[in-house]
Amino acid sequence: MQQKFIIDGVKPLIGEIEVQTAKNAALPIIAACILTDEPVVIEKCPHLKDIDAMLDIMRHLGASVEFDGDNLTICCHDVALNVINSDLTGKLRSSIFILGSILSRCRHAYISHPGGCEIGLRPIDLHISGLKSLDVKIADDRGVICCDGTEMRAGMVNLDFASVGATENLMMAGALLDGETVIVNAAREPEIVDLAQFINAMGGRVSGAGGSVVRVIGVKKLHGCTYKPMPDRICAGTFLAAAAATGGSITVNGIIPEHIFGITERLKQTGAKLGFHRNSIRLLAAPRPRPIHKLETNVYPAFPTDMQPQLCAVLARAKGSSVVVENLFENRFGYTSELAKMGAAITVKDRVAVIHGVPQLYGATLRASDLRGGAALVVAALSAEGRSAVYGVEHIDRGYEYIERTLTELGASVRRADCGS
Ligand code: EPZ
Image (tube, rainbow, N blue to C red; front, side, top):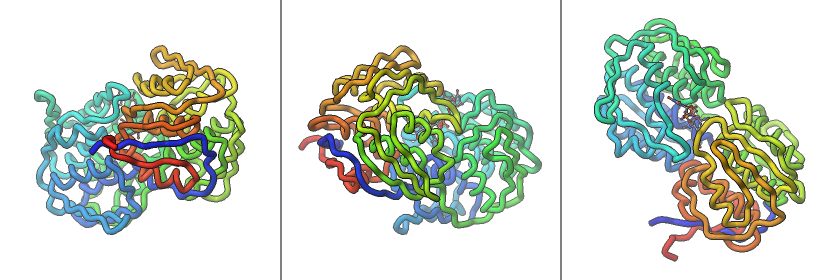
Protein backbone atom coordinates (compact mmCIF):
# COMPACT_ATOMS: atom_id res chain seq x y z
CA MET A 1 0.00 0.00 0.00
CA GLN A 2 1.42 3.40 -1.02
CA GLN A 3 1.77 5.79 1.90
CA LYS A 4 1.98 9.52 2.52
CA PHE A 5 3.05 11.86 5.30
CA ILE A 6 0.58 14.41 6.68
CA ILE A 7 2.58 17.34 8.04
CA ASP A 8 1.23 20.40 9.87
CA GLY A 9 3.62 23.39 10.04
CA VAL A 10 5.06 25.56 11.39
CA LYS A 11 6.39 23.89 14.56
CA PRO A 12 10.00 24.70 15.56
CA LEU A 13 11.96 21.46 16.06
CA ILE A 14 13.20 21.30 19.64
CA GLY A 15 15.05 18.48 21.38
CA GLU A 16 17.77 15.87 21.08
CA ILE A 17 18.16 12.83 18.78
CA GLU A 18 20.66 10.06 18.04
CA VAL A 19 21.69 9.76 14.41
CA GLN A 20 21.23 6.42 12.58
CA THR A 21 24.02 4.34 11.07
CA ALA A 22 25.05 5.46 7.59
CA LYS A 23 23.13 3.85 4.70
CA ASN A 24 25.98 4.58 2.29
CA ALA A 25 28.51 2.92 4.60
CA ALA A 26 26.36 -0.11 5.44
CA LEU A 27 25.56 -0.91 1.78
CA PRO A 28 29.15 -1.48 0.55
CA ILE A 29 29.99 -3.22 3.85
CA ILE A 30 27.14 -5.69 3.27
CA ALA A 31 28.46 -6.31 -0.26
CA ALA A 32 31.97 -6.85 1.16
CA CYS A 33 30.69 -9.72 3.35
CA ILE A 34 30.91 -11.84 0.17
CA LEU A 35 34.70 -11.64 0.55
CA THR A 36 34.64 -14.11 3.46
CA ASP A 37 32.86 -17.44 4.04
CA GLU A 38 32.75 -16.75 7.79
CA PRO A 39 29.89 -15.01 9.64
CA VAL A 40 29.97 -11.21 9.90
CA VAL A 41 27.96 -9.19 12.43
CA ILE A 42 27.06 -5.63 11.43
CA GLU A 43 26.00 -3.76 14.55
CA LYS A 44 23.26 -1.12 14.63
CA CYS A 45 22.41 -1.77 10.97
CA PRO A 46 19.71 0.70 9.89
CA HIS A 47 16.27 -0.64 8.90
CA LEU A 48 15.89 0.90 5.43
CA LYS A 49 14.40 -0.11 2.08
CA ASP A 50 17.81 0.15 0.41
CA ILE A 51 19.30 -2.18 3.02
CA ASP A 52 16.39 -4.61 2.50
CA ALA A 53 16.98 -4.54 -1.27
CA MET A 54 20.69 -5.26 -0.81
CA LEU A 55 19.90 -8.12 1.59
CA ASP A 56 17.50 -9.56 -1.02
CA ILE A 57 20.43 -9.67 -3.43
CA MET A 58 22.64 -11.34 -0.81
CA ARG A 59 20.01 -14.00 -0.08
CA HIS A 60 19.57 -14.57 -3.84
CA LEU A 61 23.32 -15.28 -4.06
CA GLY A 62 23.02 -17.88 -1.30
CA ALA A 63 24.01 -15.87 1.78
CA SER A 64 22.26 -16.41 5.10
CA VAL A 65 20.95 -13.13 6.51
CA GLU A 66 19.50 -12.64 9.97
CA PHE A 67 18.53 -9.57 12.00
CA ASP A 68 18.64 -9.77 15.78
CA GLY A 69 17.20 -6.41 16.74
CA ASP A 70 19.58 -3.93 15.12
CA ASN A 71 22.42 -6.43 14.72
CA LEU A 72 22.63 -8.10 11.32
CA THR A 73 24.46 -11.41 10.85
CA ILE A 74 25.47 -12.32 7.30
CA CYS A 75 27.17 -15.57 6.34
CA CYS A 76 28.30 -16.03 2.74
CA HIS A 77 29.64 -19.55 3.26
CA ASP A 78 27.23 -20.96 0.68
CA VAL A 79 27.44 -18.15 -1.88
CA ALA A 80 27.82 -19.86 -5.24
CA LEU A 81 25.42 -18.10 -7.56
CA ASN A 82 26.91 -15.16 -9.42
CA VAL A 83 23.97 -14.03 -11.51
CA ILE A 84 21.92 -11.02 -10.43
CA ASN A 85 18.96 -10.11 -12.62
CA SER A 86 17.27 -6.77 -13.13
CA ASP A 87 14.41 -7.54 -10.70
CA LEU A 88 17.06 -7.25 -8.00
CA THR A 89 19.50 -4.72 -9.42
CA GLY A 90 16.77 -2.43 -10.72
CA LYS A 91 15.88 -1.23 -7.22
CA LEU A 92 19.32 -0.28 -6.16
CA ARG A 93 22.24 1.71 -7.50
CA SER A 94 24.49 0.04 -4.94
CA SER A 95 23.92 -3.34 -6.57
CA ILE A 96 26.75 -2.47 -8.97
CA PHE A 97 29.42 -2.71 -6.29
CA ILE A 98 28.47 -6.31 -5.59
CA LEU A 99 30.47 -6.87 -8.78
CA GLY A 100 33.86 -6.33 -7.16
CA SER A 101 33.19 -8.70 -4.30
CA ILE A 102 31.64 -11.46 -6.44
CA LEU A 103 34.57 -11.33 -8.88
CA SER A 104 36.97 -11.54 -5.93
CA ARG A 105 35.19 -14.65 -4.75
CA CYS A 106 33.85 -16.41 -7.86
CA ARG A 107 35.88 -14.86 -10.69
CA HIS A 108 32.72 -14.71 -12.82
CA ALA A 109 29.71 -12.43 -12.48
CA TYR A 110 26.58 -11.64 -14.52
CA ILE A 111 24.75 -8.57 -13.29
CA SER A 112 22.01 -6.42 -14.84
CA HIS A 113 22.45 -2.67 -14.99
CA PRO A 114 21.69 -1.06 -11.60
CA GLY A 115 18.73 1.17 -10.76
CA GLY A 116 18.80 4.05 -8.31
CA CYS A 117 17.40 7.55 -7.88
CA GLU A 118 16.16 9.54 -10.90
CA ILE A 119 18.81 12.19 -10.31
CA GLY A 120 20.88 11.56 -13.39
CA LEU A 121 21.99 8.92 -15.90
CA ARG A 122 24.05 7.14 -13.25
CA PRO A 123 26.53 5.59 -15.75
CA ILE A 124 28.83 2.76 -14.65
CA ASP A 125 31.66 3.34 -17.13
CA LEU A 126 34.17 4.09 -14.36
CA HIS A 127 33.32 0.77 -12.64
CA ILE A 128 33.74 -1.11 -15.92
CA SER A 129 36.96 0.63 -17.02
CA GLY A 130 38.42 0.20 -13.53
CA LEU A 131 37.75 -3.55 -13.50
CA LYS A 132 39.11 -3.85 -17.04
CA SER A 133 42.34 -2.25 -15.73
CA LEU A 134 42.56 -5.33 -13.50
CA ASP A 135 42.22 -7.56 -16.59
CA VAL A 136 38.60 -8.45 -16.00
CA LYS A 137 37.01 -9.25 -19.36
CA ILE A 138 33.64 -7.49 -19.57
CA ALA A 139 30.90 -7.65 -22.21
CA ASP A 140 27.43 -6.14 -22.16
CA ASP A 141 24.98 -8.73 -23.43
CA ARG A 142 21.62 -6.98 -23.88
CA GLY A 143 21.80 -5.16 -20.55
CA VAL A 144 23.56 -7.94 -18.65
CA ILE A 145 27.14 -7.12 -17.70
CA CYS A 146 29.09 -10.38 -18.18
CA CYS A 147 32.40 -10.42 -16.30
CA ASP A 148 35.18 -12.99 -16.66
CA GLY A 149 37.78 -12.53 -13.96
CA THR A 150 39.70 -15.77 -14.51
CA GLU A 151 42.77 -13.73 -15.44
CA MET A 152 42.13 -10.73 -13.20
CA ARG A 153 45.24 -9.45 -11.43
CA ALA A 154 46.26 -6.67 -9.06
CA GLY A 155 47.33 -3.46 -10.75
CA MET A 156 47.03 0.31 -11.06
CA VAL A 157 43.66 1.94 -11.73
CA ASN A 158 43.34 5.63 -12.53
CA LEU A 159 39.77 6.91 -12.10
CA ASP A 160 38.80 9.74 -14.46
CA PHE A 161 36.43 10.94 -11.72
CA ALA A 162 36.65 10.26 -7.96
CA SER A 163 33.58 8.03 -8.03
CA VAL A 164 32.45 6.71 -4.62
CA GLY A 165 30.96 3.49 -5.93
CA ALA A 166 33.78 2.75 -8.37
CA THR A 167 36.36 3.25 -5.59
CA GLU A 168 34.41 0.85 -3.35
CA ASN A 169 34.02 -1.71 -6.15
CA LEU A 170 37.76 -1.69 -6.86
CA MET A 171 38.72 -1.95 -3.18
CA MET A 172 36.64 -5.12 -2.95
CA ALA A 173 37.97 -6.44 -6.28
CA GLY A 174 41.57 -6.10 -5.02
CA ALA A 175 41.07 -7.45 -1.49
CA LEU A 176 41.84 -11.09 -2.41
CA LEU A 177 44.05 -10.53 -5.46
CA ASP A 178 47.71 -11.55 -5.22
CA GLY A 179 49.72 -8.30 -5.19
CA GLU A 180 48.94 -4.60 -4.73
CA THR A 181 46.03 -2.80 -6.36
CA VAL A 182 46.47 0.97 -6.43
CA ILE A 183 43.44 3.22 -7.00
CA VAL A 184 44.50 6.69 -8.13
CA ASN A 185 42.03 9.60 -7.90
CA ALA A 186 40.02 7.56 -5.40
CA ALA A 187 36.96 9.08 -3.74
CA ARG A 188 37.79 10.52 -0.30
CA GLU A 189 34.34 10.24 1.32
CA PRO A 190 34.16 8.92 4.92
CA GLU A 191 32.22 5.90 3.64
CA ILE A 192 35.37 4.85 1.74
CA VAL A 193 37.37 5.00 5.00
CA ASP A 194 34.67 2.95 6.74
CA LEU A 195 34.77 0.25 4.04
CA ALA A 196 38.58 0.13 4.31
CA GLN A 197 38.33 -0.26 8.10
CA PHE A 198 35.79 -3.06 7.63
CA ILE A 199 37.96 -4.94 5.11
CA ASN A 200 40.93 -4.56 7.48
CA ALA A 201 38.79 -5.82 10.38
CA MET A 202 38.33 -8.98 8.27
CA GLY A 203 42.13 -9.26 7.96
CA GLY A 204 42.54 -7.21 4.79
CA ARG A 205 45.34 -4.78 4.00
CA VAL A 206 43.89 -1.49 2.74
CA SER A 207 45.75 1.78 3.25
CA GLY A 208 45.38 5.39 2.13
CA ALA A 209 41.57 5.46 2.33
CA GLY A 210 40.37 9.04 2.79
CA GLY A 211 43.10 10.25 0.46
CA SER A 212 43.29 10.24 -3.33
CA VAL A 213 45.44 7.10 -3.56
CA VAL A 214 44.10 3.90 -1.99
CA ARG A 215 46.37 0.83 -1.83
CA VAL A 216 44.96 -2.69 -1.44
CA ILE A 217 47.41 -5.53 -0.81
CA GLY A 218 45.52 -8.74 -1.52
CA VAL A 219 45.46 -11.49 1.11
CA LYS A 220 44.74 -15.21 0.72
CA LYS A 221 41.71 -15.25 2.99
CA LEU A 222 39.50 -12.88 4.94
CA HIS A 223 37.83 -13.89 8.21
CA GLY A 224 34.53 -12.90 9.81
CA CYS A 225 34.27 -9.99 12.24
CA THR A 226 31.87 -7.76 14.15
CA TYR A 227 31.70 -4.18 12.89
CA LYS A 228 29.68 -1.04 13.58
CA PRO A 229 29.54 1.24 10.53
CA MET A 230 29.89 5.02 10.84
CA PRO A 231 27.00 7.38 11.65
CA ASP A 232 24.97 8.85 8.80
CA ARG A 233 26.32 12.33 8.07
CA ILE A 234 23.51 13.06 5.58
CA CYS A 235 20.76 12.11 8.03
CA ALA A 236 22.41 14.30 10.66
CA GLY A 237 22.55 17.15 8.13
CA THR A 238 18.94 16.61 7.16
CA PHE A 239 17.64 17.00 10.72
CA LEU A 240 19.88 20.03 11.28
CA ALA A 241 18.45 21.56 8.09
CA ALA A 242 14.92 20.85 9.31
CA ALA A 243 15.71 22.67 12.56
CA ALA A 244 17.21 25.59 10.62
CA ALA A 245 14.09 25.73 8.42
CA THR A 246 11.65 25.80 11.35
CA GLY A 247 13.46 28.25 13.67
CA GLY A 248 14.23 25.38 16.02
CA SER A 249 16.97 24.30 18.39
CA ILE A 250 18.19 20.69 18.32
CA THR A 251 21.11 18.52 19.37
CA VAL A 252 22.18 15.57 17.21
CA ASN A 253 24.18 12.91 19.06
CA GLY A 254 26.43 10.15 17.72
CA ILE A 255 27.99 12.12 14.86
CA ILE A 256 31.66 12.34 13.82
CA PRO A 257 32.25 16.11 13.69
CA GLU A 258 34.70 16.21 10.79
CA HIS A 259 32.22 14.27 8.63
CA ILE A 260 29.75 17.16 8.67
CA PHE A 261 31.94 20.30 8.60
CA GLY A 262 31.07 20.75 4.90
CA ILE A 263 27.40 20.84 5.90
CA THR A 264 27.58 22.85 9.14
CA GLU A 265 29.68 25.62 7.54
CA ARG A 266 26.80 26.18 5.10
CA LEU A 267 24.15 26.04 7.80
CA LYS A 268 26.11 28.74 9.66
CA GLN A 269 25.78 30.93 6.55
CA THR A 270 21.99 30.75 6.94
CA GLY A 271 22.45 32.49 10.31
CA ALA A 272 22.17 29.37 12.47
CA LYS A 273 24.43 29.09 15.51
CA LEU A 274 26.20 25.71 15.79
CA GLY A 275 28.39 24.21 18.49
CA PHE A 276 30.19 20.88 18.60
CA HIS A 277 30.69 18.92 21.82
CA ARG A 278 32.53 15.56 21.43
CA ASN A 279 30.22 13.48 19.19
CA SER A 280 27.28 15.89 19.37
CA ILE A 281 26.30 19.00 17.54
CA ARG A 282 23.79 21.63 18.64
CA LEU A 283 22.03 24.00 16.25
CA LEU A 284 20.10 27.15 17.15
CA ALA A 285 18.28 28.45 14.07
CA ALA A 286 17.96 32.08 13.01
CA PRO A 287 14.35 33.33 13.17
CA ARG A 288 14.44 33.47 9.36
CA PRO A 289 17.30 31.95 7.31
CA ARG A 290 19.79 34.19 5.59
CA PRO A 291 20.52 33.50 1.88
CA ILE A 292 23.75 31.91 0.64
CA HIS A 293 25.21 34.00 -2.17
CA LYS A 294 26.62 30.92 -3.94
CA LEU A 295 26.36 27.27 -2.83
CA GLU A 296 28.19 24.58 -4.85
CA THR A 297 28.09 20.83 -4.33
CA ASN A 298 31.28 18.87 -4.73
CA VAL A 299 33.14 15.77 -3.58
CA TYR A 300 34.13 15.35 0.06
CA PRO A 301 35.07 17.36 2.09
CA ALA A 302 33.10 20.03 0.19
CA PHE A 303 29.33 20.51 0.59
CA PRO A 304 27.79 17.14 -0.36
CA THR A 305 25.30 16.72 -3.22
CA ASP A 306 23.14 14.54 -0.94
CA MET A 307 22.41 17.63 1.19
CA GLN A 308 21.64 19.99 -1.72
CA PRO A 309 17.84 19.52 -1.82
CA GLN A 310 17.45 19.81 1.97
CA LEU A 311 19.47 23.06 2.17
CA CYS A 312 17.57 24.51 -0.78
CA ALA A 313 14.36 23.88 1.17
CA VAL A 314 15.84 26.02 3.96
CA LEU A 315 16.90 28.76 1.50
CA ALA A 316 13.38 28.85 -0.01
CA ARG A 317 12.38 31.04 2.99
CA ALA A 318 15.63 33.06 3.20
CA LYS A 319 15.70 36.84 3.42
CA GLY A 320 17.21 37.25 -0.07
CA SER A 321 18.40 35.24 -3.09
CA SER A 322 20.75 32.26 -3.28
CA VAL A 323 22.49 30.62 -6.25
CA VAL A 324 22.95 26.83 -6.02
CA VAL A 325 25.22 24.88 -8.40
CA GLU A 326 24.85 21.06 -8.54
CA ASN A 327 28.17 19.74 -9.84
CA LEU A 328 27.66 16.00 -9.27
CA PHE A 329 24.34 15.01 -10.86
CA GLU A 330 22.69 16.42 -13.95
CA ASN A 331 19.10 16.10 -12.76
CA ARG A 332 18.94 16.82 -9.06
CA PHE A 333 16.55 19.81 -8.94
CA GLY A 334 13.35 17.89 -9.74
CA TYR A 335 11.92 18.55 -6.28
CA THR A 336 11.87 22.36 -6.89
CA SER A 337 8.68 22.10 -8.96
CA GLU A 338 7.04 20.65 -5.84
CA LEU A 339 8.40 23.47 -3.67
CA ALA A 340 6.84 25.94 -6.14
CA LYS A 341 3.40 24.54 -5.16
CA MET A 342 4.16 25.86 -1.63
CA GLY A 343 4.97 29.37 -2.89
CA ALA A 344 8.73 28.94 -3.35
CA ALA A 345 10.31 31.12 -6.07
CA ILE A 346 13.05 29.01 -7.66
CA THR A 347 14.37 29.19 -11.22
CA VAL A 348 16.36 26.21 -12.52
CA LYS A 349 18.55 26.11 -15.64
CA ASP A 350 20.62 22.96 -16.17
CA ARG A 351 22.74 22.54 -13.02
CA VAL A 352 22.01 25.99 -11.54
CA ALA A 353 19.07 26.99 -9.31
CA VAL A 354 18.37 30.60 -8.31
CA ILE A 355 16.28 30.74 -5.15
CA HIS A 356 14.46 34.00 -4.35
CA GLY A 357 13.59 33.56 -0.69
CA VAL A 358 9.95 34.19 0.28
CA PRO A 359 8.75 35.12 3.80
CA GLN A 360 6.40 32.15 4.02
CA LEU A 361 5.70 28.78 2.42
CA TYR A 362 2.19 27.30 2.47
CA GLY A 363 1.10 23.68 2.90
CA ALA A 364 0.39 21.79 -0.34
CA THR A 365 -0.01 18.32 -1.81
CA LEU A 366 3.47 17.17 -2.81
CA ARG A 367 5.04 14.11 -4.44
CA ALA A 368 8.55 12.81 -3.73
CA SER A 369 10.33 11.24 -6.71
CA ASP A 370 13.73 10.51 -5.17
CA LEU A 371 15.29 10.04 -1.74
CA ARG A 372 16.89 13.40 -0.93
CA GLY A 373 14.35 15.41 -2.94
CA GLY A 374 11.70 13.73 -0.79
CA ALA A 375 13.59 14.72 2.35
CA ALA A 376 13.61 18.31 1.05
CA LEU A 377 9.81 18.23 0.68
CA VAL A 378 9.51 17.11 4.32
CA VAL A 379 11.83 19.94 5.44
CA ALA A 380 9.77 22.46 3.44
CA ALA A 381 6.44 21.09 4.74
CA LEU A 382 7.69 21.38 8.34
CA SER A 383 8.46 25.07 7.72
CA ALA A 384 5.20 25.83 5.85
CA GLU A 385 2.04 27.40 7.27
CA GLY A 386 -0.74 24.83 7.25
CA ARG A 387 -1.09 21.19 6.21
CA SER A 388 0.93 19.36 3.57
CA ALA A 389 0.59 15.85 2.22
CA VAL A 390 3.82 14.28 0.96
CA TYR A 391 3.20 11.30 -1.34
CA GLY A 392 5.90 8.84 -2.43
CA VAL A 393 7.26 8.20 1.06
CA GLU A 394 8.70 4.91 -0.22
CA HIS A 395 11.50 7.04 -1.66
CA ILE A 396 12.18 8.62 1.74
CA ASP A 397 12.07 5.25 3.51
CA ARG A 398 15.03 4.18 1.34
CA GLY A 399 17.38 6.30 3.44
CA TYR A 400 15.68 7.51 6.63
CA GLU A 401 14.83 5.10 9.43
CA TYR A 402 11.27 5.93 10.64
CA ILE A 403 11.79 9.63 9.87
CA GLU A 404 8.32 10.54 11.18
CA ARG A 405 9.15 9.08 14.62
CA THR A 406 12.33 11.15 14.89
CA LEU A 407 10.57 14.33 13.76
CA THR A 408 7.70 13.71 16.19
CA GLU A 409 10.24 13.34 19.02
CA LEU A 410 11.40 16.85 18.06
CA GLY A 411 7.90 18.28 18.31
CA ALA A 412 6.84 18.12 14.67
CA SER A 413 3.30 17.23 13.65
CA VAL A 414 3.97 14.38 11.18
CA ARG A 415 1.99 11.19 10.67
CA ARG A 416 2.18 8.37 8.15
CA ALA A 417 -1.07 7.39 6.44
CA ASP A 418 -2.17 5.10 3.64
CA CYS A 419 -2.72 7.04 0.43
CA GLY A 420 -6.29 5.82 0.30
CA SER A 421 -7.13 7.49 3.60
C1 EPZ B 1 27.25 7.46 -4.05
O1 EPZ B 1 26.65 7.19 -5.32
C2 EPZ B 1 26.08 7.61 -3.09
N1 EPZ B 1 25.31 6.37 -3.06
C3 EPZ B 1 25.19 8.76 -3.53
O2 EPZ B 1 24.17 8.91 -2.54
C4 EPZ B 1 26.02 10.04 -3.58
O3 EPZ B 1 25.21 11.10 -4.06
C5 EPZ B 1 27.22 9.83 -4.51
O4 EPZ B 1 28.00 8.69 -4.06
C6 EPZ B 1 28.14 11.06 -4.52
O5 EPZ B 1 28.61 11.32 -3.24
C7 EPZ B 1 25.78 5.32 -2.34
O6 EPZ B 1 26.83 5.37 -1.73
C8 EPZ B 1 24.91 4.09 -2.32
P1 EPZ B 1 29.53 8.46 -7.77
P2 EPZ B 1 27.59 6.76 -6.58
O7 EPZ B 1 29.94 7.22 -8.47
O8 EPZ B 1 28.65 5.86 -6.12
C9 EPZ B 1 29.43 9.95 -12.22
C10 EPZ B 1 21.98 9.03 -1.72
O9 EPZ B 1 21.12 9.93 -1.82
N2 EPZ B 1 29.82 8.57 -12.55
O10 EPZ B 1 30.49 9.12 -6.83
O11 EPZ B 1 26.68 6.32 -7.65
C11 EPZ B 1 27.98 10.03 -11.77
O12 EPZ B 1 27.12 10.11 -12.90
C12 EPZ B 1 22.80 8.65 -2.94
O13 EPZ B 1 22.24 8.41 -0.66
C13 EPZ B 1 30.18 8.27 -13.86
O14 EPZ B 1 30.17 9.14 -14.74
O15 EPZ B 1 28.19 8.18 -6.95
C14 EPZ B 1 27.96 11.27 -10.96
O16 EPZ B 1 27.87 12.40 -11.81
C15 EPZ B 1 22.39 9.42 -4.18
N3 EPZ B 1 30.51 7.00 -14.16
C16 EPZ B 1 29.33 11.29 -10.29
O17 EPZ B 1 30.15 10.40 -11.07
C17 EPZ B 1 30.53 6.00 -13.22
O18 EPZ B 1 30.89 4.85 -13.55
C18 EPZ B 1 29.31 10.82 -8.83
O19 EPZ B 1 28.96 9.48 -8.85
C19 EPZ B 1 30.16 6.32 -11.89
C20 EPZ B 1 29.81 7.62 -11.58
